[in-house]
Length: 265
Length: 251
Ligand code: SF4
Ligand code: SF4
Ligand code: FES
Ligand code: FES
Image 1 (cartoon, helix red, strand yellow):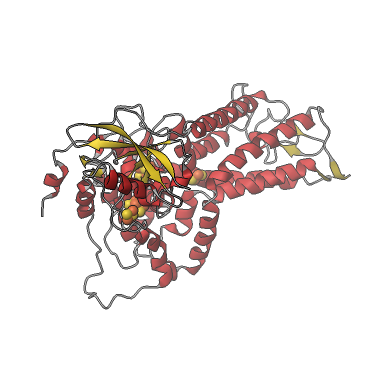
Image 2 (spheres, chains in turn yellow, green):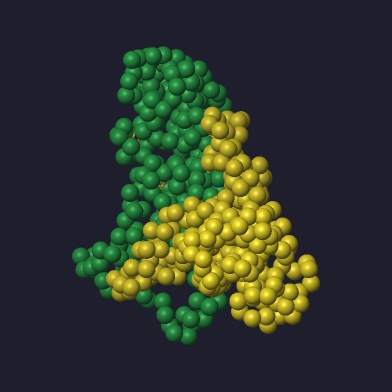
């Protein structure tokens, strides 16, 4: 038998095909749509996080997730569901400065979003069997990308923030029931779907076990998380949509551009 | 019924080669491999193509059709328009021997580098006992027919020949994950997965999953769980501390 080293240097070369790809389909459409989708969200969320208007509808107790938790004296009266342990914040710091960086980190290190931006923004590769433009490639073996391995820590924090968002949605039910409540609630349900379908969640709940038979409860949880996990990409996009929709609705209602559709009172 | 299909086939060897145009009769229900065979029988008797089962089970006929890595025997002619030029080329990532036949020994080398199944000491073959739920998860990976389409498509080596020594490719990282999840395997393969087999090169862009003819969820069920296990071992101070303090690990 040939030794591994011998086999590897068989001396032959690849077929001489100059084209970067021979694909004839429109392979560039998915990366293009991904880039447009991500850019739209980043711009919208970036602008809204710094606006400091239209984030709290005092009449119906609607708080947008982009300002939760609001913990400083700069928050509108009523919007700080957990008190205001922090004094005034200068205008260049978003009111949700405690949650936003972690949520950003959670999505940036998410296995799905990694695939999305590695492909559509970094072109590594832009599509399957389409050559990437870079001459060197080291993947996630070294800094800075090795940091992606910390994804689970962002998951732990995101879990807590989703609890806070859930609390916000429940608090909004005091004083009636309107379309805004449904929107807040729907957003929170999908946020849970996204957060719980995370690959790190799948790993810590049960995936890391070698013997499911010795841990029936964790095995059951792992099974449920695995079922959600197959739709992780869908939840990733759905939640970007519902986050924007929720924020926009609170913005429009609180600035009296539209009025909330009330079902009870 | 039958029509004249336009085929463009790469012909050559490791010295040189080019795409050549042919017109080959196509009949209803045929696959690309049928046309390659007809081409061989009628116009190009020396055309080299590797195949065996013509049933998508032996993994021999891997090639690229219109730039997409596929099994020739599982690519139906009906997915192409009758006037479409169908380009058939050998797998790009491996050295070409002749025409559509490549030298896939890179994969055999990588296969040999994965340490084999390691049962607990003192347990003889025949004494192995496992629970169904414990082996179930890794059974999916055993559907692999070793067509090496995933290895061919993975950009880590497809676009970077120089990464071949450091990177074992999705098929063999999946093999490591399979053994790591095996209820009776006692070897800890997490460090080697990262340092010797190059798991860190994978950026989970899922092309291996996209081309796998057995529809194995390579990325979601093998590579990402393996990355998480490596994180336990190397990048998670809390898990590390927990293992030190409570001597956990064998669960
Ligand atoms: S997911 Fe990883 S192993 Fe699979 S093709 Fe992409 S980079 Fe290669
Ligand atoms: S994992 Fe799938 S694509 Fe890769 S060699 Fe096995 S069957 Fe082929
Ligand atoms: S949030 Fe996407 S994988 Fe964790
Ligand atoms: S000939 Fe066996 S898989 Fe195609």
